[in-house]
Amino acid sequence: MSPTKIVDARVLVCSPGRNFVTLIVQTDDGVMGYGDATLNGRELAVASYLRDHLVPLLIGRDPSRIEDTWQMLFRGAYWRRGPVTMTAIAAVDMALWDIKAKYAGMPLYQLLGGRSRDRMLVYGHATGRDVAETIDAVANLKEQGYEAIRAQSGVPGLEKIYGVSQSGKAYEPADGDLPTTEAWDTAAYLRHVPQLFEALRVKFGDELQLLHDAHHRLSPNEAAQLGRSLEPYRLFWLEDVTPADNPESLRRVRTQTVTPLAIGEVFHSLFDCKLLIQEQLIDYIRASLVHAGGITHWRRIADFAAIYQVRTGCHGATDLSPITMGCALHVGAWLPNFGIQEYMPHQAPIEDVFECDYRFERGYMYCGEAPGHGVSVNEEAASKFPYKRAYLPLNRLKHDGSLWDW
Ligand code: KDG
Ligand code: MG
Image (cartoon, rainbow, N blue to C red):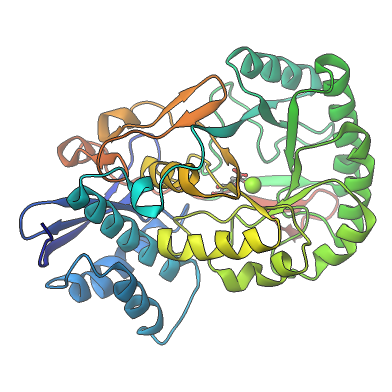
């Protein structure tokens, strides 16, 4: 049986440990679909976009018309793309796919074309204030069965840096009611990173897959230097070496190093990554389902990437809710050119609010067999965790205090 119309769509903003925005769409016969709409540090802008501009368009629509709804929200707005718009559209799209799969009585991956793989390889995050601490963190993840590990470490002379927890707790970058400030020194970073990976290869040998995130801070030439200096350590990928604004930057990097490159967690659409994919300037595309228009648009990116032998490596930081993870795992189970999935486990009390049927086991994630994308929200529990303003940090050059990319 098919639903006839959407009778309710509501936006839930909650903070069980960190902020999440969720869209809940309900059909006339009571089926609920859930979509993630979280945009770290700008959550309320997406909540308003949904509440004030999209929800009125959804009420009364046929929820089975996913493609037409997507086209209406994207092309019909006149103002296209951008992170707020594309995150809001993604939330609607995930919720409608969830509803369609629930009506079909199938796990979402079946609607996409069925399984291509049994389980999804993930990479975990190892961080330490220095090389020794990072080695311990890698050893710890290895023991948990991870086969691929991203390694970040503090840089001598820099007090605080992206990816490294200062408190001993799990790293959560949106840590201030107002933005905190970090100090940056490119030369110190470029000297340090090869030493970290040298130490990791000496300790763990050749088999372990190692990744690193440069977090958008280098010029094309500096990125090329880093890529070359890391070649002896055979990384799985080097991520976000240059800011994503100029895709042409990657041409210079690509011709200078064979270290595999990944980029795209801040992309919103195929138009952001078209050139990078078409010219085969990257090996992995990192766009996420939540910020790149949901399943409907994201799979167009992935299909386009497949033609050029680019594989996926979906963003999976804690600022993406379990709903995005659920969708990414179903898509990953089907997608022929799936590469790897980032996995940063959410912290308590998130499990009081989100019920998930996916699981992690020994370095791999498994999506569940329940109809839909397998993640739902307990609205009553969510109401106990109200929104708390939180910003990502700012980054300033250590030597003169001018603003840098974070
Ligand atoms: O909100 C910003 C985070 O999602 C980002 O800093 C995480 O770079 C990141 C990653 O690779 O997970
Ligand atoms: Mg990143």
